[in-house]
Length: 106
Image 1 (cartoon, rainbow, N blue to C red):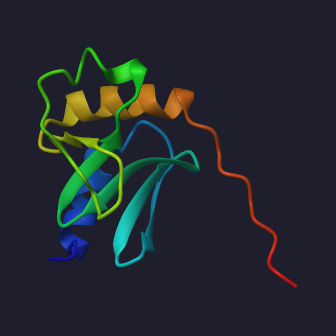
Image 2: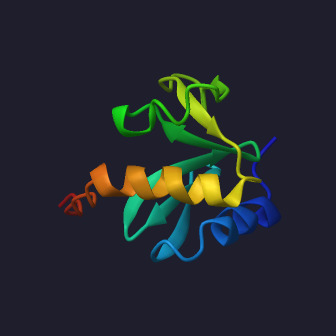
């Protein structure tokens, strides 16, 4: 089941106010960016965040899962808990770099 447009819009609304929120469709699913940094992957109407040291204590009781086949294990972000999500995503955004732009192949 692919992520619905309604769900990706809900995720972006839940994160509003912590920076510039954008999303991009990738391989049929979505990546959510905060200030141009990739922080949340949304697959099958589920929001996932990387297992990072900066959020380990806060996410110790969170479910885990795999956003797609071959991916590393991620935390499942309870997107209904807006304040908690904003806290987690803000911490991730602080340690995430803006991806380098790739040059097109000649």
